[in-house]
Image (tube, rainbow, N blue to C red; front, side, top):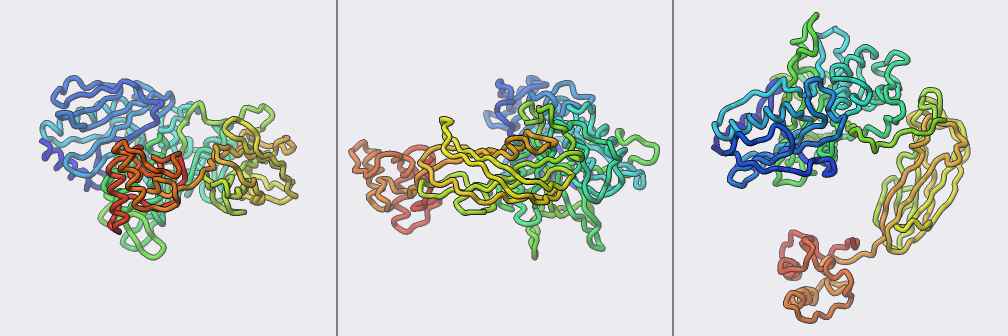
Length: 576
């Protein structure tokens, strides 16, 4: 039976753009998961629940794990969905190293998928899964006014999945997409500005333009806090590892691709990403880790929706593409075959934060929440480093390090800000004691919309071992009238720790045979001559399993004998 199921999934791994694929996905924040997770043997077909979390097993081996996230608003806007929240599932393809992950499922389609998995496993039968409430906004026949609005369709999918559409009163992804179509000219755009219009009514300088006064459905939120863009044209696997983690944490994900045909470049396109097939033999940032991507595409059935037909009647389809690494000058990404004549090359990803009552929003009644009428200057980002004016953030330092901070001010409004700048920076320890505070001011500077300004690299100084938080606040006295005040403050948690050498069990500053002997004596419950007994386990725990054991002794001995060791030894690391 396992071989028949393996053959089935082998077919699924090579199906084309218009083929359907089963919908499975992965981990979600633990706080939202139902506590009761039942284990059901696959032989007991009739007992699998129609809702809730469960693990499907075969003689004790996990075949499929389904988790239900009860978070009101998340993908709950679909008309045919009987319960709020979404489902995720994750499983290994039997007798392979491939793990399947997919998200965005409803109670209705996860039940169908459950039955399909059971039947495929027990009978080796194929199955077809589409029109099960997948979130898939569809474009219509060319020249109907939405030919270039793939970015708006994908934005609509993300807003629906993450719950923001429901918060704004929309019932489906098609409703959101039609709001975009009615408001925008038929031209290019991206998810960042799509959410900017949806939340705050702002438009991009170029590309598709909205009708004045449209959008702005949730103005109390700042769209800049909602979306992030990732460049995947170079080191795509590294970028995808972050995007994959976001997807597993409930974020919506859209991928930008360049499409090439027989005559060369044909244009850019936006698709919605719901999962991956991965090879677990490799780390997440390795290009061989990503085997397939699972998506919905607003173009998949647009030719079916001809003039006079409703886009809502088009099939909602999830498709699976095989990913092929592509490397050439200036490019290190993935491509996939769309048709016999077309390939897609992944260039960017956009993520959208899921709705939660904990997402910050404006509560100050004096804030206008109008980015076209008032300034909005926010701290983005705040850098923390051992180097003055560094453009990166470090969160672990030694007591000998001089720590510098550099807040950058970003103009999120549609107006040029010509005034002066004020800033307050405070550092507190774990007990809330203020260890550093300073007020800064900066002369007038014309800061254009969409640009940021470095606020100097100022030294906090040196701090003793401990846990700290740095908080930077722009415009602390509200001398500048802004559209939003809640985004004027940014904090970073950081640590100050001593360093040690991995394998230096006795704390002498050198990795030698004495360290291996010290572990052996400890395991034999004999006295061990250790220079520094504090954090002894952490220094000697080469395997990082939380204890000293024979494996650590073996690694040390192999290292001292100049043999290969798969774990770092004699490498500097911070204490936890």
